[in-house]
Length: 278
Image (cartoon, rainbow, N blue to C red; front, side, top):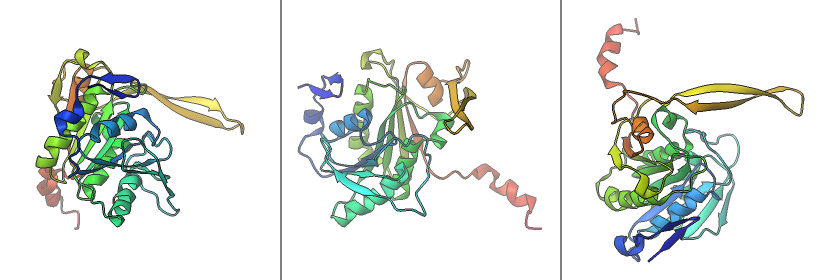
C-alpha cells in the first residue's frame, strides 16, 4: 500500500500497521505555519490512520509567535474543509489560541481531545529556539489544558521529507497515549532528508541554539528605516551528542521530553537564604 503526502511518497502501510478504523482517540492538530502549510497536511494524513483528527490552526503564518495569546480583540473562527480531518477550523489567533479555543469548541460539540499534535513545522525547533516557537508553544498549551501533547518539526524552512516525522508522530500517538501524562510534551525534530539517509533517532536534552545574527536595514515605503532579522545557526564542535542541537547537526532525529515547569529547584533554598523580604 502506498500513501502520497504532498510531494513525498511513503511505502510503509501506516493504516494497516496502526489499525485503520480504530476511532477511540481524538487528536487536535495545529501548527504555526498556517492551516494551508504542507507539513500540517502530511501530519493529518498520517495521524488519521490511528485516530479521529480535528484541525484547529492559524489562518495564516504565525511562526515565532511563542506562547502569545490574543487579548483585547476578537478571534475569528471559520469551519473549513480539510482532507483527512473530521472537522477543521481556520482561526485568526496564535497557535496557543488555536489549542485553547479549539479544545473548547470541540468539547461543545461532544468531542473530548485526547492528544494535541503541533506541526509538522517547516524548520527545526531545537534548544533555546523552543522559547520562541509557536509550534512548541501550541503543544505546551495542550499540556496546560491537561492533554498529552507532541510537537513535530523538520529542520528546513523548505522541508519536503516528512516520512520519518510522520512515522515518529504515529508512534508517539500509539505509545505516548498509553504512557504520557499531561505534564509532558514530546519535542520531535527530524532532518530534512530521505529516511534512509537519516542516521537514527536520539533521545536528547535541550541545548543552546545560537546564531550569527544581524538586522538588515531597509528603507520602507513610508521612508522610515526598517530592520529585518536574519541569521545562520552556529556550528558546534566537541559538545555531547545527547544535546538536541548536536544530534541534528550530526544527522540524527531527536526526541526531547519537555515540561512547562521552569522552576530551578536547585536554587530555591539558596534564594530563600537571601531573605529578599527584609
